[in-house]
Picture 1 (tube, rainbow, N blue to C red):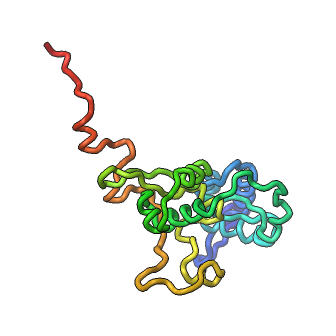
Picture 2: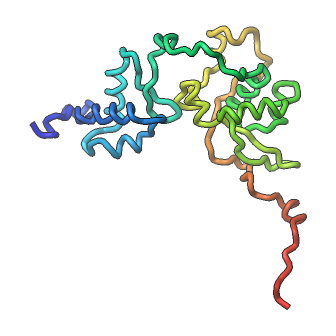
Picture 3: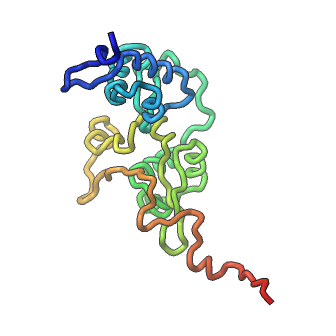
Length: 231
């Protein structure tokens, strides 16, 4: 039978070549890090639809000891959630996140891009440099740019590693208020007009941000004067 005969030929059904399932399995198994769809698409048959191939691989691994999951927009093999306890390391992380760091991370994730002043305003207390340093060392938080405001404060946002660590495909998958309340992570009533914002980690700088390496007009004015070599 030819390739065309191996395809799911119903117009309403997604199409893929069965051999491509094995190719994707090999790619995922050999990958040292999650792989993007462009990498997968470059290796499979042109007759296959990437969405159909990945959906079929996910289906095949749904009940196995490892699952195929999408994290931070990429694909990877992950231990099935109900078996994660088997691989739990007995030794604990040497550096635990403090409550301040956890609260800071949550604020950055939901309110990004934010400055240190924004974080302090939301928390109601000062933010130590150490809390931000720990989050950046973990690779979960990055410096985005500078706010177009007096002092040009640095703005912070989350990274793809943050999504991967917490098993999120996109920042929009963070739990909303209803989910937080259902999980018992939030109790009580919110002040009028207050709610959990819709998170957005778009890497494009906002209108009120500028690149980190772009000097302000004041810095340019105070910069060193370059003398001309012309006599």
